Image (cartoon, rainbow, N blue to C red; front, top):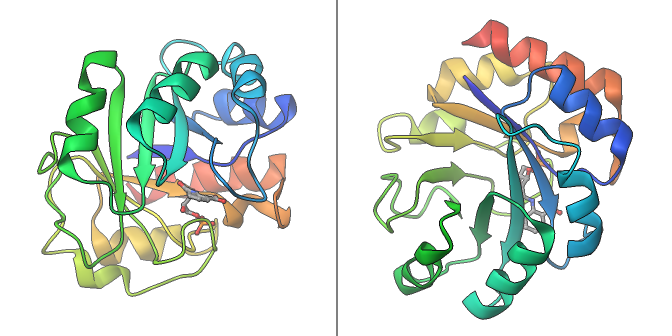
Length: 197
Ligand SMILES: O=C(O)c1ccccc1NCC(=O)[C@H](O)[C@H](O)COP(=O)(O)O
């Protein structure tokens, strides 16, 4: 089970996620209360060992802006939300970063359909912490795909049983207040996700 902890902004939480065994950590580089500057993401990404994927999260920006921010941040993966066309993934391919297509359940759920490396199937409102009908995508999603949207330590096992994803992603479910991560919740989520696999 691949586990991504998203929306990190503090050193303490990046270190906790890495030490607790996260496979990926995400930095929000788009409009959001969780947004951090690419330069700040670069400071945090420098704390992350090579075996953990650093992910820059974007929504709706044009490929040139995504490229510039991803280079400044030094992230090894780019996650695009917001109905980006196939051509945006093609335009970013030469960067050599892992490309993540983030969609809701209404989209094409075959990982690789847009030449992406990973697919993230999320609630309609990304980062909203809202559970949805995870089981509905079980037969439709395929390949290297992550389930997201309203996951938390207490429900990730049920979500995995319902949707059978390749990986999971969490943000709100490891926060004690909007945008404020908690180390104990990060550890609890990783433990529960591992046990669910
Ligand atoms: O988290 C945000 O604020 C955000 C804003 C705009 C685009 C994407 C965003 N988050 C992306 C993520 O990968 C979240 O972890 C994912 O949507 C799950 O969030 P949650 O339901 O809060 O666990």
